[in-house]
Image (cartoon, rainbow, N blue to C red; front, side):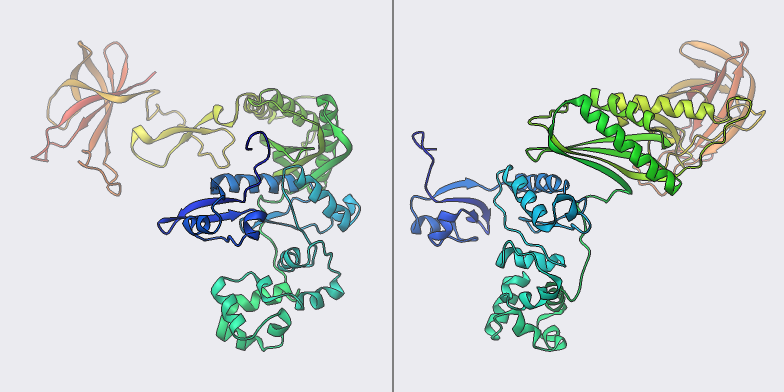
Length: 493
């Protein structure tokens, strides 16, 4: 703005490249004056002194492209990015929901227009053909029988090759895809590479490749589009409950239950909000899922803002597992897995309210190092390592209380390698009545450590008062360079 009126000067975005500020993007006015991408800013100012500039922000551009892709997921879950400024939508089987291909294209353009984006689009049988038509025959809906003939009339720049290849093709006398298609493919491949031949076949519709969607397609999905934007949360939750019923019915037909559910709220202005719901066990219970959804929505740090309303709602199952329905008992008694189900329900509620990372479980690590043998991980981790069960009838091999830093103690032993007779810890003298050991734990030699830790001999000891301790000697007496020391590492119950 200048003096309260829109700035009409040509505008470019610049970024530093090759030691100089160069043009990264131009508006229509700048392009009309001969300014182009890659031109040095100094040269551009010499041609157009009144040019307006701004700093390019590739990260912000990428975030905006991602937001546009999410906005287009209302039409199909198969949305992929194409370059820095393009989207590819696989609308197979989706067009009838929007009144056909033309109605879907019109709805997509309107949705992106609300986000401040000018678009040019086309529909064709392959991603490369659609991409080429969008740039050179915008608005085209290519009929399969006519698509190849239309594509043959496109210029060679429609193949989207690098500048060197396009220049070489032009110098060789090729002007259209028809010129290239008339030459044997092995001749083109030998001179310009297999990439050019593959791009030509895909653009002509002779070869199809599946797009790689931005997000993994769901295993089961149900959605509802509203004729008018909906803003009342009660109405949205009622719709979500009906979608949950449809999803659970589909899961039952597959003999599966959902573990990860995603609810997508598509706002009328193009904004999309995803809410993830994970469960500790596979489930097909609509009521349970709705309880978790309500808890999750109520616990959102950033509340769900309807704005001008939501025009679509989707419930998707991102991960499912086999689930066999439990057989009820004739006498009405509880099954053996009742406790496990109750624990799973508790975990689900806690995760929905406090977040995935806030609900942890103890796991075991595959190591002999006592300090690293245990840890925690989110309860809903895909493959947690269970804690090993103690041997029946045997005392625990590890203490319940383990000090983060072993504490130095004074020890008296009959011979250097024998268990201690007595030791002093925290100014208290303990007479050893029973001892078991040693359990020798050597350092993990494959891990780099400087200096290398010493070997430890652990003992389980009990004093005259019945207190049980876990102590160790650090270092071996046969090592002439070592000075063995004794430490208290843990307490048994």
